[in-house]
Length: 191
Image (cartoon, rainbow, N blue to C red; front, side):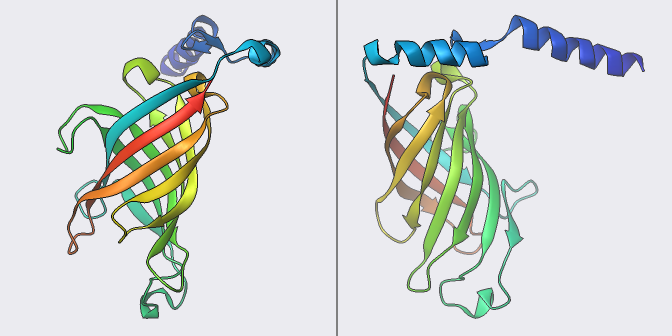
């Protein structure tokens, strides 16, 4: 019981003491105030570069299959195959590089014609000057193309009302384990 009370107290203290991210008030009144000031805000452009580690086969995988169609493995494109992910985002391609965030979401094979993934994910920044902010991606990822462009459709925290482009390029892939490291360049406009 004492442990429950301590956890409850800590949660309450955090929600009272830390009501904002990057100085942004996230309460309904704070968001209303932010929108009222929006006509006077200037658009900012931010460029980000990081590596996405999609680990399927490991002791602790970061992407796990959650669904498949009855005929997924008869399809040349694995149509209907779906994975949930919580992949690390790092500064450099090495797995032990500094983690700056997580890619959390779902990807699945959504094409009968080629290996094309529907990607729906949030880039959740957990370190550095964007800590607590997110960017949302919803797009088509043709994994065998050298460069894949996917739209940034929104964001939170520093990236409120974000829009932009995420360009992915496979850095390394192991066809046996299906583990991959993908380099991302992101250009985003926000206020």
